[in-house]
Length: 266
Image (cartoon, rainbow, N blue to C red):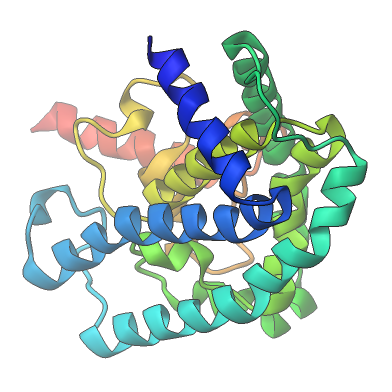
C-alpha cells in the first residue's frame, strides 16, 4: 500500500514536471530543506544553552559568526550549488539517470546507496587529506576551518573551490551507476543528514555513532576541527576505517583511551 502511494505521488510529479525540473530544482529544494531543517537545531542549541551537557566543546560561536555562516551559505548554495546541478544534468542523463515508473526495487535502492557511501568515503578521505597540505589549506580549506567549534550548518561552509572539489565525492557514485531519481534524492537526504550530524558539535546518547559500527559521527569529526591542520587527522566523512587503515586517527584514539582511563579512576 505504501509503495502504491509512493508510485502515485511519483506519477503526479513526472506528469506535472519535466525530468530536468525535478533533477535540478527538485534536488535543490530537497537539499535546502533537509540541510537547514537538520542544521538549524544545533545553532539554536548553542545560542540557548540547551543540551549543553552533550556539547562536545564548551566554547560557543557568537551570534554574529553564526549569522555570517548562514548568509554565506545561502549565497554559495544559490550561486554555486544550483548552477552546478543545472549544468551537470546532461552528464547524469548521459550516465543513465531516469525518473520513470515503476520505481526501482528497494534492494536496488539500498545496494546503490551503500555503494555510494563506501565510494564517497574513500574519495572524500583522499580529497580531504590533500586539502590539508599547506598551500591548499591556507588558500582554500582554511575557510571551512574558520569554525573550530562546528555546528550543523558549518558542514557546507567552505570555499567555492572546495565545494566543487569535495562535491565530486558525493556525485561520483550516482554518476557511475545512473540511478533512478528517487534513489538520487534519497542519497542526497542521507548524505546531508550525515554531514550535518558530524558537524553538529553535540554527542547525544542517541547519536548514530553509538549504534552503527565504523560510523564516525560528531565526536570523531569534532576532534578534526579543534586541532591544528597539520595534526588533525580524522579525514573521513562517514566511516572511520580509512583513518584507521592509514593511521590518521592515532591522536584521536590516544585521546579517547586517556579519557576512558580517567573515567575509570573517578
